[in-house]
Image 1 (cartoon, one colour):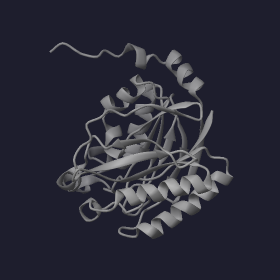
Image 2 (cartoon, helix red, strand yellow):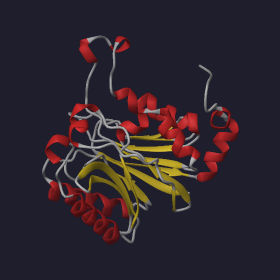
Image 3 (cartoon, rainbow, N blue to C red):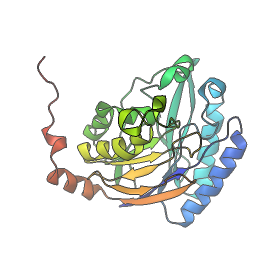
Length: 265
């Protein structure tokens, strides 16, 4: 069993050092609280502004995240720009308490024209790795909105999916009543718990805070239950995550075993 934390906080655009100083303070607090790993929002260090920050120095950000994890002796999931031969990706990295980067994942599903104009889509499935007795995988934001992505992580053996995210506040689109239109808050309140339930997996989902983002960061359990939710304010939430509960959930609800891979045309 491990204690997983999710930090809901808004990264200020182009204020990398200030953002990382805040993250360092949060990591120190989380370590004192006995949290094993804390998930932070998408592109928190630079602020989420793809068209402005896509040229940021992701290597430097990752170096500072690794240093924070090592000094505070806590595992951290942090998001940065990954520059590979001039091609840029939104990435998420897992740093263990020694500051080692155990895995780096590049976002598969880019959201909206701004991201697509400056970043490339990652081509790899989430890689499963072991930490604190759990099999973990990383996703980023829009990825979790696709059932196939979370199912791929679960089939690869993940007990929990750790997801930095940046969900912009939309309100009710076109000014229509909530029952007649899209509202991005439903990603946290409906979609994330559904992904957890249909795969028998934990999902830790770390968003930026309002007013420009929806907030509502959460940790969902394998029964589709919300174990912790951040609501509107900045703050740290935590839940206990147990691999045995994943197996129990899948025995009770057999979605994971019963789904068909293909359907006839």
